[in-house]
Image (tube, rainbow over the protein chains, first blue to last red):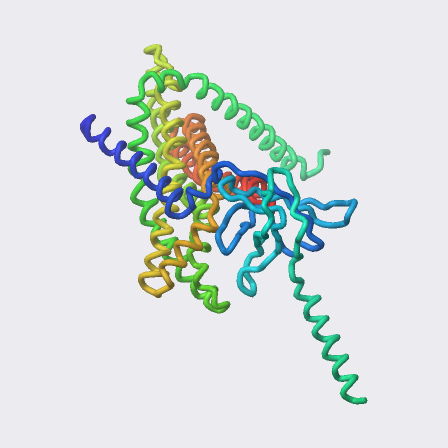
Length: 157
Length: 264
């Protein structure tokens, strides 16, 4: 095989490999999520985080505005301290509520932010005061059962 | 009178010492290869020629098997996911299993049997027909001229082949899932894109295939270089290449996976 044919085939091979990598990066992965540009960190303390994981999305009005950076246990208040990396483009008021929600019945858990009416905005390192813990299915069920039992008890009387 | 199990113990010990010696020689061999890599970078034509034999000629088998593996994943994944009514997650299943595991591992296994065995046989025959000694006589270092270009060609082509495998597999999953079965196209791609992380999944997959490329080419070149210069020796070395590199790929995959994907 001639020298130029060899170069041609190797060129095709390298281009195809690179193209496959680009396809994987853009079509399969989401390039826009990479790094995500500048972010700032805000903290929130939750009584119970349920099944929240690092890198879970942070959504406001259903739009992804950031990712959970880390989850640690606060041993003084016995709560879970969640650090969130929110994209710098999005600002939230000081009285924003953070709640742990579930996508669908069995879906992944994420943090939902709901803006309040405060004039002052959250800065990097600030904490969200209003939080709502994850719904724990077992607690809901036991509550439901207790209510039912209590109802049954009153009806008999 | 010595116990009758003594010869067995003795041969086990001899084998063990022999293997440790070979491991030491293999380490020295890879060190020499790296030290003599300058020539192949000064003459990229050497690497390009080997890229043709290791990369281009492996491309067809990689692309076709990638397509079929992706199609099977689409079919099997659909069967399981539809039980839970979550067939929209088919894209996630296909993409994550390909990018994280199947892409690097299966393409490495194919690469070992397609290109690795050829490398061993070629170098083993070069040694058996005394071409390597002839080079040394002409003051050409066979490691710099023969081994190093093959090593770098293998290391370069492995990640590219694995990426092709994964891309082709996702395409195969798309054909079966969306075109043939009729999973919603929008949720197929969008769920895939929100679940697959560039750094965590794709870059880790590329790192895996890079490590596999180093392991396979190292084993293949060493087996060829160390092969007894007989027909039997070369055939034995070729078999050993495929067996050892497949085992090395699977063992390395376990180690790398436990490092990369164990957290959260």
